[in-house]
Amino acid sequence: MKGSVGELGEFGLIRELTARITGTPAVRLGPGDDAAVIAAPDRRVVASTDILLEGRHFRRDWSTAYDVGRKAAAQNLADVAAMGAVPTAVLVGLVVPAELPATWPLELMDGIRDECRVAGAGVAGGDVVRGDLITVSITALGDLGGRDAVTRSGARPGDTVAVTGWLGWSAAGHAVLSRGFRSPRAFVEAHRRPEPPYVAGPAAAALGATAMTDVSDGLVADLGHIADASNVRIDIASAALDVPAQMSDIGQAVGVDPLHWVLTGGEDHALVATFHPETKLPARWRVIGEVLPARGRTTPPVTVDGAAWDKAGGWDHFGGPHGH
Image (cartoon, rainbow, N blue to C red):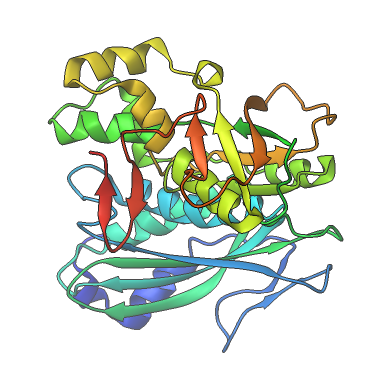
C-alpha cells in the first residue's frame, strides 16, 4: 500500500487493519461495533496489558513492523499463559504519526495476528489515534478453563523451581544489535520475536504448579517477585542453567559473562514455576533450583549457588536497566 497514514485517514486505516484480522471461536463479535464480545466459558477473565514505545521498547532500524507486532502480542499473551490460562483475544491500541508509511501499521497488525494464531487467540478490536511517537498498546484476555489461577504467591519451602523456554537469548541478541551486528541470527531473532511457551502455562497449572510467572524482567528479578509474594527464598543452581556454546562465544566477543544474560536478561518470556517436589515434570521443564524458608531482610530473596548474585540485573521501567 502506497502513501502515508495521514493520506489513508483514520477510518481508512481502521478498515485496512480490520481486513487483516481473522476470527476465532472465542471472539463472538469482533471489530465493527461499539465493543467486542468475547466468550468466557469459565465466567472469569484473565486480563493483562502492556505498552511499547518507539525508541524505548523497539527501534525501527532493528525490527520490522511485523517483528514489533509479534513481540507486542507475545509479551501480553505470555502474561496470560503465566497465570495458567489459555489466551483467547487481544485488543490493540495504536498511536501513529500522520507521516508514517501506511504499510507500517498494516505489517504490525500482520505480526500481532500471526502471534495470536500461535497462542490460539484472536484480535478482537482496538483503537487508532494520531500522535508524534509510535505507541503500541495490547490488552490480552484469557480463560482459566475451570482451574484456579496460578499466582506468584503460592510457592512453599521444599518446592522445586523449574523453567521452560529460552533464557538470556534476547539479551544476547540485544548485545549483538547494539554493537552494529546482525548475527548470530538466532539470538537477534530471539530479541526481535520472542517465542513464549504458551501451552506450558495451562499445562503447568494442570500439573499443580504452586506459583508461576513469565521471565520478562530477568530470571533473578522475576523469581524475586515470586519470593516476595510467597514470603520465601529461592536458590538457583547455576550448573542447571543452559548456556549455549554460541551464547558463550558472543559473551567472549563483547566481554560479558553469558551467565549474566541468563540470570538477568529479560524479554524472552520463558515460564518459570514452582512445583511440589514429588511432581513429575515433562521433559520441557528444567529444574533449576529450590524454594527455601525466608531468613530475614538481610538475605536476598533470590540467591545463586547459595550466594547473592553480585552483578545486579533486571529491568525497572522507571530506573532503567541494571547491570549493563
